[in-house]
Length: 282
Image (cartoon, rainbow, N blue to C red):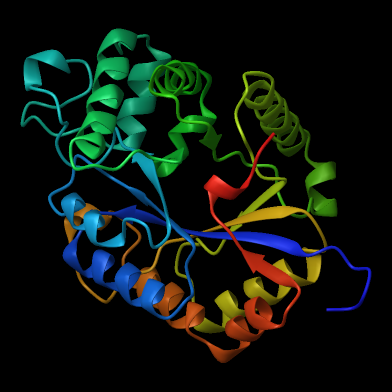
């Protein structure tokens, strides 16, 4: 680190803890190797209680989920959120129902509260919130999540201000509107008293290859010059579980790249400090 330079702060957060045993194992291994500083838990999924083994080692948040698996609450308490088999609707169907105003805000709020309660009952208070399949970006869910987070005194939240705005985005009106909305949403969270990072980026990409992931890593660290960045990652060992939806083989690629010597050099060269949401304040 050059004298006088500001130390960059990086949260490396692994989403989806609890979704499968192999995803959990990948996260445990990365924590052991010093390559993660935070994770978020899906407390409606079968393996979420294993998070107790990470208590005190890294930051732990909650990964609100309304699109994968079964709800925490009983089926009659979430009737607008589940299909005939009692499973959450897939994202596409959930959004259709949202647009048609067929979702109960009360049921959503109660289910999200139940997901927090599942974490509290095993002795863990989440330090921040994010959401599976980025539901928090949508105004309906964002408003409900804000109320629930306030009720439980959770002060950190993932927002989506991009690390770099690509020039070609500015030539596409829809992209410009999305960027403006994400900035507005971040300001709403801040004005409500929540701690947020300066920027957010991720490795997630359909059909991600090792070469493409390394290219993304290089671009991220070339553009990361100051402030607090959250890097969202989705590591996992190879498996073919329906719970993983359409993002399966890519998880093993992310795991491999996080262990790559080039990635390690970026986070261990002395000018980056790994932190969690517990370490950032308004």
